[in-house]
Image (cartoon, rainbow, N blue to C red; front, side, top):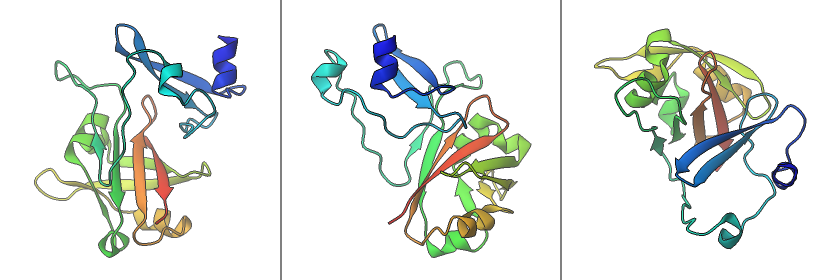
Length: 175
């Protein structure tokens, strides 16, 4: 275990989440003290070092959505993510949230979220039901954009933090 902790540069009070992928493989995520996922950490990068049969490499595309397997329809605990490339219209007053993301994470009923930026700052944002089950970030959304000086054309990746009080980590990838 000490070698693993060294390989992922694990620091005091950071934690590791192991998600079973199949009978003998895990997806490993390292989280910082503030609950934000570490984006990169040193460790084996050669596919051969990761073990035989590891062919799971994924490239994210803009407006990607990821929903965990929900099995029997109960609320899933897993990795809920989506990303958006920002256009001029996103700067007016709202950003649409994928319906499955809003419902699956529970923000469709709570209607309040907290966006956490890369510096750990928290931005309270209201979620509204626009029409026909369409959800959007409204009040507070523009404050997040201005406070982070996010330019048009940037992509923002949103990741729901399981077990939190509707906290969503927002990672800004400037164009």
